[in-house]
Length: 304
Image (cartoon, rainbow, N blue to C red; front, side, top):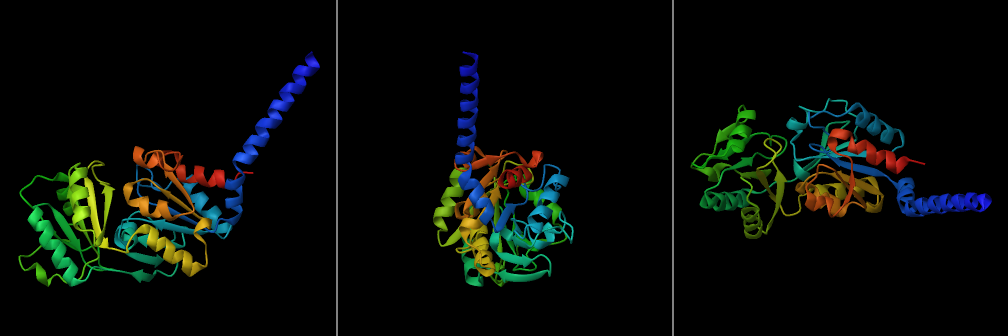
């Protein structure tokens, strides 16, 4: 009887091991073929203190040692990225301004840049003024940390906070706004009003209208307006083609709505535990940015 119980235990263990191997076979197969990792920055690679943990830093170095391309994809401009990442940070490429531009991180050469033309800027400006909402319009790359702003009588502390942060680069939009010319993007900042976001997205369907959660108060909705073909996903696809990769060999990690284009494109897509429930219901989940979720994902991919 004891022998039978022992054999049963061994068989149960063996079945469990086989199940684990089979359930992770695709995952491990993808690991062997992995060529590129694309990660969001704020809320994903950066922890709540807006720093990269020592563990995540080492994970990026590990990817480099394995000749896997490391890409950060962020809504930040180059100027803003340089405030949180050192010059020699261990990545290969930077997708910035939500895909409007791509920077070779090692040579600091801008490989790709897109903007709204002056006619498009004029059209969007008229529409947003008619809506009577607060917005900013940013200069083209590489000066897109400079912007003009239109401020209504509506109280908007998040909007005012962003102007304060960039006070050296911000100025009111003049009444003769037709002189502004081309622009990298618009940033509209509204309270938590998803319906308004959806209405703007529908009205401006000829553009890519992206929703993001404010990195300042963590509640307000930032609506970013770009040319139709601008997104983190399309920029990652451009890099993938340039580097001779296949999307099936690309891992994407994000945390917010503005990562959706990227996560819908990458062959393997993960969100950190601090992502909105809507995203966690759609993609696989790793640990939060406070617990080095980036490294947890890399460890899973390279575990034996």
